[in-house]
Length: 141
Length: 101
Image (cartoon, rainbow over all chains, first blue to last red; front, side):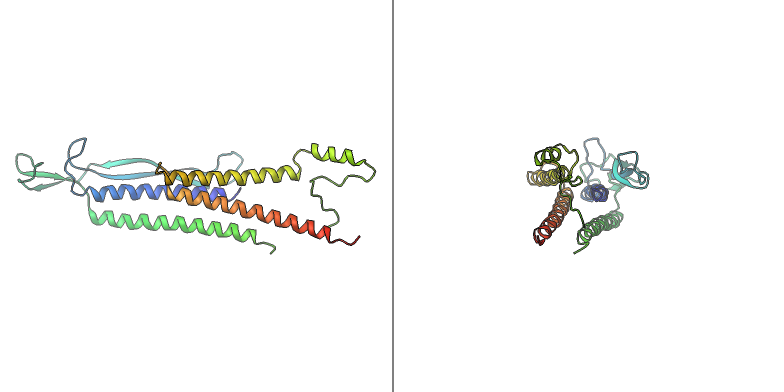
């Protein structure tokens, strides 16, 4: 069915934005985490998205034009670990400094709004496609 | 609309015995009946898919909400399409039944 292709693309977009949202939530939740399984403070994570041809068969003319999105990986941002003087902290070094995560809450919130809007856009595109399909079924009535 | 052919092949010549036409109809590959059957099967498959997606989310087994919604919308649209085909078929059938003889 020709309407399943835009649905597939919408689905991939929604999944990608959900993945980004998950990572942002994780970043926000770990804004004060100083202890991680791999050692050191929590490091800000970021989702890398990649596109992929949405059409499987080779005879599709739109093959290169239509691309689904997918999560290629999640990378850690190791720069900008903050050292805060707090000798009473259990994870403080011998000079009294604690390594805090490199998370800027304001940046994360802005990114969250961005992701939210993208998700809404995908959902709206889905609705519009569905309405087109339903309108098509009304032809001749 | 001089010849409405529901069987998907041209109307058989009148001289043919009826038994042979029925046989020919059954043998016709890719006739309208086959297409309709395939379509109903597709609709059924999409509905099964939607059901599975719902079950996956309900049992909290790595299912995502948007996939459920999309599967349900797919099933909805395919079912509506099938209903439209059925309505058209019935319309044509009733038109034929109303014909003055």
